[in-house]
Length: 267
Image 1 (cartoon, rainbow, N blue to C red):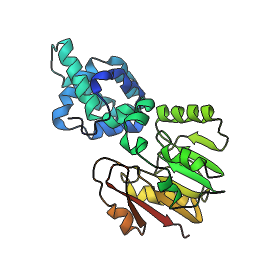
Image 2: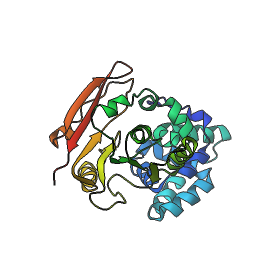
Image 3: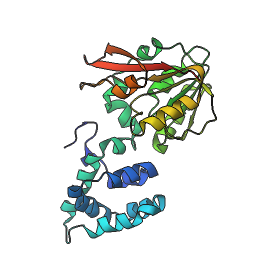
Image 4: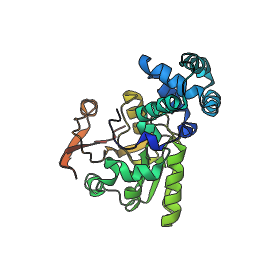
């Protein structure tokens, strides 16, 4: 059921859904399969604090939330309610693990199995101003900060932003800052960065995202797509290839091919 294997959902309280961001709540509700709606309804019905917060964050989806609650089976036992919660937590494992960044840092293969040299060898970062989009726990951003003049880590999930800020403070870094921002609506003016990079981010709104990455990057600068190494086989990114990005594959830590991409910005 839990394909990624990053968490055991039995170890999480449904209260972690209180930490969902607006874009995550929208995603959960939009892509909830018909068979899972009564399950979600049962979990929400048993967690009025989550219902209240989700409605506050997404008032436009309040009616949909009420319909889900109304679809919940009646007279469920405590064990049945907990099973409904665990089913939902497992089904949105990637969002749930974002609420515990320290677990993400330890369990996600694309983070702990990644070698920062796979970034350094495809683009010179010395003296550059760099943007990392969808930074997560800062895999790319912290690596870039060891070389670059200045790094901005843009991340839409508050728990992950705070994790990075704590790490910056622990390390005594002065050349890295963290901010909120989605890939297709970045909070920067045009032509700010020498290098704009991401990994496991571009794709949901491909054209808008690539246009936005290009907009904030200087003429002659570089766009980088640098995913982490994974145990599973990954596919070539045909959309990046069609958009003129150069493919730079290598065999990763776990013996599988990792596909990196870069493109020089020309305005």
